[in-house]
Image (cartoon, rainbow, N blue to C red; front, side):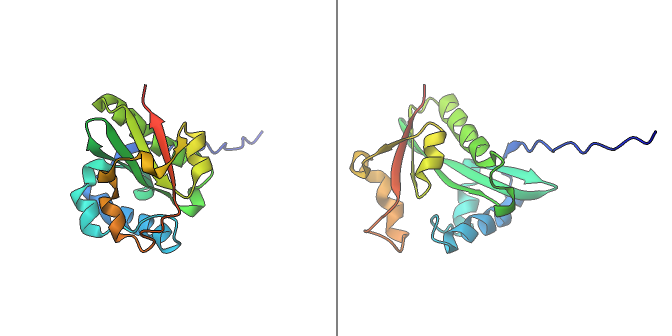
Length: 162
């Protein structure tokens, strides 16, 4: 009797990004920025903030990325969350958000926010919608680079770390 080989699905893990990942993070994030779904990121900015980034790799290729950027003792931002189109709907984005929230908790940061066009996705991860005016002014420094400034149409969301 011939046995059928059963192909097991790979479990893709979230890891801290390495310098070698930067060009792929840049390409992935800017792919979605070109579609108007997130802010573009300069290559130099990703290198400067590499410690913020988490990645998911498959066969050496970055198929997902996300970052936790610390603003102050009590506030951080989840940003640059992107998953390759062919890998979407596999909970990879949720795994990246979870890694960011876990790191915020480890650091003792009680609040994490995001600005997004994907409000329902972030709500499923435990974020709640807030008015942009509730966010501190210091977070808007990056917004000046956005072509949509000052008419931002992203949704502000907040996660309270327990």
